Length: 195
Image (cartoon, rainbow, N blue to C red; front, side, top):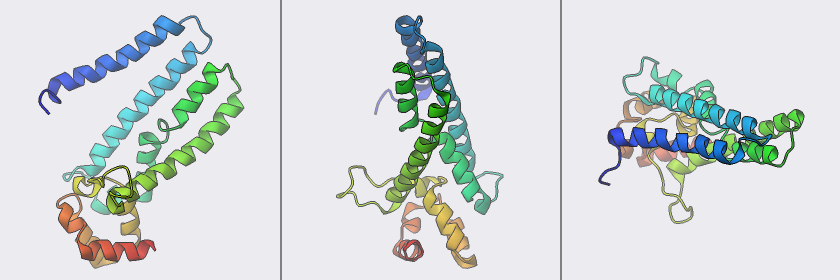
């Protein structure tokens, strides 16, 4: 698409974020939920930035982190906790609780805990469908996490069950060639381990 990306995109992102805070201040500055909403949105922005940074570090082919360590369960949990475990459902519910005047911190914490788990499982499902999803049965297209070398549930689980030669094959192809990663031999072999 013409006109998308580049320096203008960075400015647009910053401007859109500023608009959110401007609109909150304009319409809700005198309301009791104004400060908690600001806190939630600032926290979201911070965690999104951390997640993008971590994802770039883990996905980079010239990363200083060794291949298997980039795709460990610990790294995946860190990434998902920043990337997904706040905005799909949690942020909406927390904002709604504040807007409804519910200030019970115990309820907020319990809600966050449950919603974080739901969002984590949503991300695992999304990762799985990214590689193995059926475009005709699912509303979203099969993605390109493998081609981009992203830390996803698929590679983490594959490395957990792979033997030495399988790990070498994954290291040679992951993030470099989508056809090699999705080839029949890799896919059927890894799928048999998932079953």
